[in-house]
Every structure is written in C-alpha cells, then in structure tokens.
Image 1 (spheres, helix red, strand yellow):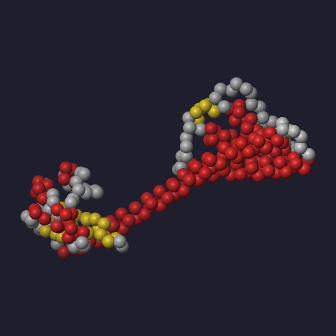
Image 2 (cartoon, rainbow, N blue to C red):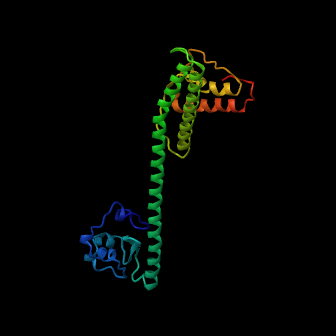
Image 3 (spheres, rainbow, N blue to C red):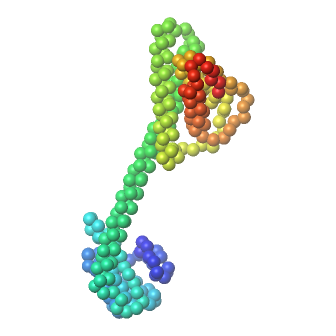
Length: 260
C-alpha cells in the first residue's frame, strides 16, 4: 500500500501484498477490474482477515495503467453490501487513468528536478575547482608585474597585463557561475572557518588595481594588520567583497578616487 484514506491505520500501514499469494491482485494487475458486494471469498485476499476485521463488505479494484502498462491498483472499500455498480466501475476506471497520469508526471518532474540539481552541482564543482588555480595565476602575474622576479621591458609588461586581464575576467566569470548555481538552490560546499580579512582585502585590491588604472581612477586599499578573523565561507566572503569593489569602480566617474 503506497497510500490510503479512510482505512484503519493498522490495515494499510507498511503492508505489502504478495501477488503470488493473491490470485485476485494478479488478475487486476493483468488488467481486469474486480467488484463485489459480499466479501466472502476470503481465500482470494491475502489480507482477507484484515478486510473482515475492518467490517468491509464491498470492494472495487481497478488497474492503474499508463502507456507502459499496469503500475498498480486503485481500490475502494465500503462497509455496506452491494455498494458498487457499473457506473462506479466506470468512474473509478477514469479516476485510475488520471491517477496514473499524475503519478507519471510526478515521477517525470522529479527526474527533471534531479537532473537539474545534478547539473548545478556539477557547475559548482567545476567553478570551485577553477577558482583556486585562477586566483594563484593572478597572484603570480602580480608578482611578475611588480618586478619581484626581475625587470621586464615595455613589450613584455604589456603582454603580461593582457594575460592578467584575461585571467581576471575568467575568474570573475567563474565567480558568477558559482553565484548563479547557488541562487538556483544548490548550496555547494559550505564552510564555517576563520577568514583573514586583511589578506582577503589585499587580494581583492590586487585583483581590481588594473581595472581602476584603466579608468584613470585613484584606487587604494586600506587593510590594517591584525583585523580579527570572521567565520564563514571564504569563497562567499570574497565574492561579496569583489562585487562591492567591482560596482564601486564601475559607477565611480573616471579620475575620481576609489578606496575600499
């Protein structure tokens, strides 16, 4: 019994019908409806004693059928004798067709939901795995551009800046992908660990320095040492700060000052 209404809880709760022990159920699963107004042939019912204990005298069973075949049985029970006629059989057959369609639609909808959730989980995993190497790439490009590994001629520096802009754009795209997947209900991996605010602010500052320079903006970052850590998801904290700084640069007129 998948669901029941009006029957004693002990009758249907957790009960299973062994078709091999119930010729009646096998006949219905083969596509034949069954109706009786005098439940006397208890040998046909696997749960005959339970039916009698519930004072049921009339039963009506019809197959639940979809395009693939019979998927179950819809039954009606009554305590009065001779309750079900041909009109009731026709009505329950129609109801069974609608129930079968509803069940099939529910299963299809759940399958589509699971497919969508799996796609979004995959997007989060891919984006999460790309964030760290992209961030490392941008940091290494910053080290090269600031001359810590030796001087670079103007042509080399120009190519380096172009590579950094592309890497930064890709990093922002990955961040947007994670936000999009999260907004559709996929939580991804969540952390509740200390986040170094000073290091986070400095990293975001390096990320947006070139963009501010391109807009002829005075961009500076004030990240005092010794700020107390905050608990949370480092990725979400970083994306929040990136969005704030990105919007500040985008909507600040050229030549003005941006100071996170």
